[in-house]
Image (cartoon, rainbow, N blue to C red; front, side, top):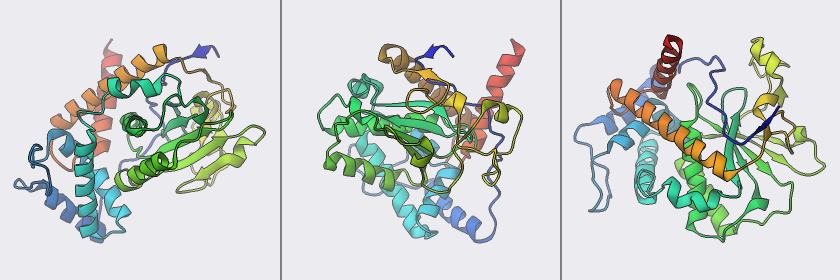
Length: 318
């Protein structure tokens, strides 16, 4: 393969299924949380005077069907705890500046060396978030944390229908400049508190180690990779089957990881493509969300499938 310096497009595979319909206790839990936030009179408690107490459009879109279920699971099905955690995250997202302060321009200085980037997807469409500590280029500070969060948000935007989690690829190939304990703790606290049910597994690369030995599942245990031919032949994604692997070679970086993608990070090429790709996808999903009603509780599945099918129809008519 020739050299590549840009992120890969959102894949159209695998053939995932829509979220199942809720019944019994699960439906009751969901309905109670939905009713709390869908109330026309709802105001976010504990907000500062300069911030609106009503939920904004971005916040209503974030508060999707799948989002509510993620928080219910994280709260171990305690509805009151789930509501409290959602409200804590809504306030944190405002205070952190997810929708206004946290811009590509603000955090770009952190990105120039390629110490963190998104490239490729696993066999279930989960975006791969690469971290290369040896390429650290800035001193500890709030912007390092902002960069991680910004890239997490972009990774979420690049998830296809039915995908809710991210995979981390951590490269220890070169001597790394360790992130401070305080920065690491801050990032960990943010992920645990405000991105529940978002991490699936992580892989590490160390010189001399077998890649297979460095896969660490967060939620489940599966195989490592399979060929693009196996995918294109429609071989099973069942993790109990030998052909079901985590990473396909044509979605994996060659250097250090053994894939077939000759990717190297070139900031001047990669960065504008990533920013444009995510901006376009966010605009498309927002437009589709509005088309579906623009309220709390709309399914991410419906939004993403709507965008996917719309793009497919546009391409077929050309």
